Length: 116
Image (tube, rainbow, N blue to C red; front, side, top):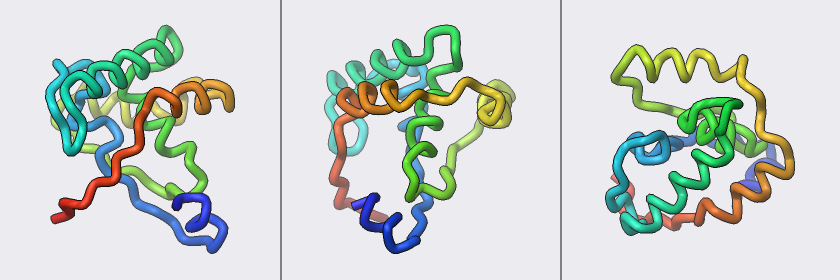
């Protein structure tokens, strides 16, 4: 869907890129249509791709913002650390094309239909 939107110059505002912090170090729990086990697996993948390059939250944000159709991401910031991570995003090492592909295999698409 996103490539089609981008092809027609339609931008997307993404939300939930760190999944309530679950991809950024919070203990795994079920989220949307994902089980706690799926969240745990995806959080581990995000952490592995972070290593010493960026925080897991920054990796998750880099991943979503690397999608051409995504023009902006809304992130919930509750602490100064979270603010520092978001503000520091432009200074972090971006995901390589290979990292995006490999991480994409781990981040299972969710077809959420319970919109508010």
